[in-house]
Image (cartoon, rainbow, N blue to C red; front, side, top):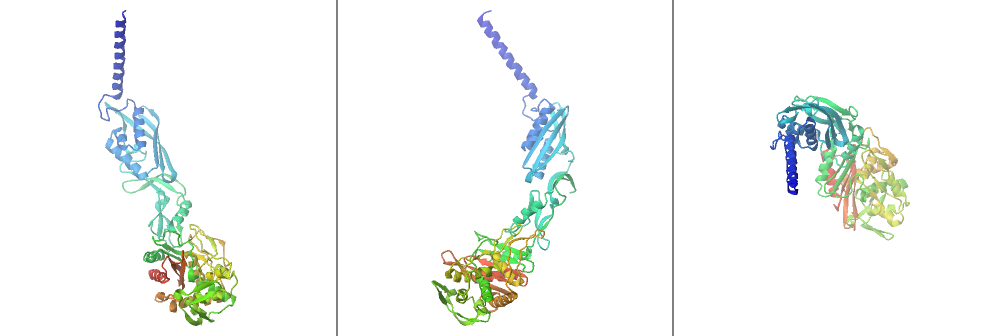
Length: 522
């Protein structure tokens, strides 16, 4: 045979092989058309695999096209995914036998919750090839027409309630969520983390067209506890409204003296650093509550002792001025307190031992430390003074003396209660006292109450004279380079003790106005 003939035979054979392969491909693909039916695999297992891959990938249209009811199937698998909101999903083929396919379905739901189940697909064949026979049961064996799937956590009821039973957080599929995210944001999220640990109950339910729910799967306790906290929605709303209207960065904390219950914690959006529960600031003349207690306990003066109130006083190398260097004729200690005579209290403090002010501050809780479930707090920091200059600065709440709005509310609550106060938040999770304190004597507290009342009736807080029987103390404290000052008010009315801080207000008057707005809201 010639070489040319051999080449012709080999070339013809190659063409024949290609033709056979192409023909086989066309047969396996069911033709060359572009319709879903035309592209169906040749076996039931192939079509089941393709259907499960599309379903797992979230390609609902392709999954639907591989069934005998494309529109209904695509809509149903999309609705199931929407109802369960999985973080991951996988449907896999276990075995295909004849016109049946055993499958496994795995939904990974929020918060790492996993729902697994087995199901069976039916497949049908017509002149176009195999198709998944679609009914809602192809998604879950108990799912029927008009049914939907949903996740429920802890029965969907309240997770956190306030002191009056009002829901502050409710159980959602991924845990407790605030009913109003703007309500007490310094408190509620921390309590929500406690609530998450109080119960992990969740379930997948089938909800029929009439709204009746049938549990398909559940984990955890039947119903976790609802956490009740001490916050008062009314007091919190009043506090938030008051600081929002303050016109400057403002904070407010309210405590019930008789119980220690934390009633409100609020600050406005203008606060860019620090917070009402743990931010430490110079308390200014509000600290004269502690200074007066130290003076009374040391016997350096009584409430009626007449003392000078010059515009300035030189103590060692430190010049102490009154606000705007006002001066008054000699007056009783209680009046010097009401008018906030810095010079009077600085002169008295200069006679006291270096640790006297720190000890007095501790009697009002400013050096106390509490572990309050759901909160991080710091009341203050007052240490023994190192020299006479520090002593006179500390006497008027400047220098190294620091307190938080929470700490000054605790100070006011101590005066009102006549005893040490342990702050409380969560009803069934009591506060642990890391560093406790003991209040001053009844005689000292009685004198302080009279002095704090005079602040409102005839002193620096007469703006609260129309707010009921209010007791308190104003304060102005310089910060930074001394060109600006914060304004304070700390006091109580009836069984509500509170403190207000306005950052950079340069006067205590705005804090008095904010206090009045808060009390009106109650």
